[in-house]
Image (cartoon, rainbow, N blue to C red):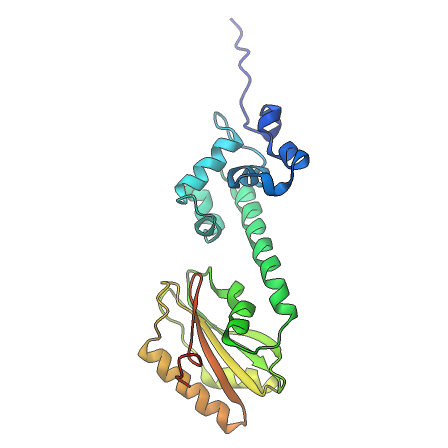
Length: 235
């Protein structure tokens, strides 16, 4: 007997009309969709035997139902972790998360006068808060405390990165900076500065002073919070 079984692709178009998230978004509003439905729209299709909605729910479940955890996964990690997610789907999802982050940060970056540590944190956090490796950046500021540049000084491993203070100061001089804000992240989430952090802060402060620049702050960025040397009176 001829096998007439149709291969199940799990596309959104194969779902019943009531279960199609695109149509639901058009009828109601994109904000009415659940996280799983939003994921389904981005993914576009599931796999044989698994609808795109089932795949979306499975991905969220494996990420403890946390979009934050999902957003921190690299493309290769998504492909390894989720059966049915190849490079194309993973890149689409990573792009959607990155757009969301840039949208959030856009307002902070257009109003770039720094009046507090919070202003500097909101400006730079998108570059550092989701990394699984340590990076060291500087913000250069003019005399009006407006940010003129944000530059990465060094990239390291999961626990440390080496910083060449001479290179850091050269970057600031090239930007004709009046002030500097040093920034690095702690992928572990522990915001407490280390002894090495304290020593490096003093070296940057002393080097900047020789060239009539001020180290205004040193921020340590975590997943969703930060530490400010200036706020703690450590400068």
